[in-house]
Amino acid sequence: MTNRPDERVVTPRLLRDWALPEPEGGKESRGTVLVVGGARSTPGAVLLAGLAALRAGAGRLQMAVATESAVPLSIAVPEAKVVGLDPSDEVLRLAAEADVIALGPGLDDIDSTIRLMGTVLGAAGPDAAVVLDAYALGALSKEPGLLTSRRAVLTPNVVEAEHMLGRDPGDDLAAAAHELAVRHHAVVSLYGHVAAPDGRAWREESGHAGLGTSGSGDVRAGIVAGLLGRGADPAQAACWAAFAHAVSGQRLAPRYGRIGFLARELVDEVASTIASV
Image (cartoon, rainbow, N blue to C red):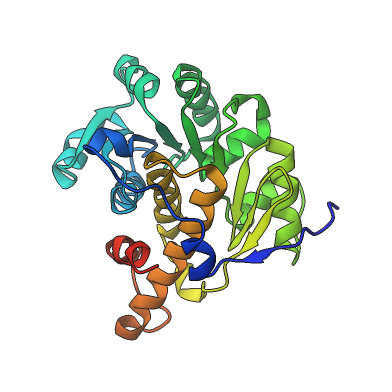
């Protein structure tokens, strides 16, 4: 077991001292985020991640989903360019030009995810940041060489962390996050614990049971991607996203109670939560 790192608590003061880059110029200055995922039965995961990226400040949003879902999703999110995963030439062109690639939301087959990751990340530019979530994390556990970016954030839940570690992470999630960060040379955000591969670590304490709702993880991955798009470094994006995700849930609790709000409602709180810091 990797030794437990010392964690700094993520507070508004810490974040104010670690201010996000100030938006300047047009939408291009806040980055292009490409969200890749959305199997035939789960295109909504890409919708949630993509909208969260925009709410976090990304300048442009592009989404690649199962081909039959592309037109309905483009109507649901008129702010985005939406393409089908097949044929893939357009996806590869978008990947080559994207500033951030978020991969995994809504995928449901590990073998096809491995192939998709190899293709998309192989086409990505050398400076592109990467966010891996959901089935992309399972693919990474089987093929660690798929991730070559050193500007990467992994956003596992506890079950996904167990698959990645090959064992139950137990109660010490800080140590589990650190172990994964070192193993994959990436920032890891695990259930409020953020670990960087250089040993830095943080803990966000605002989360509660209501965040354990369908689609919530897609929102968190999207927030990370949006913050990376606007120029945050991976650890900064992960810490700000953990705060924005958790506090957005707190803001919904007076209306719905601690349990019962929806992931889509979290999205609508993200921009104002970030602005309140």
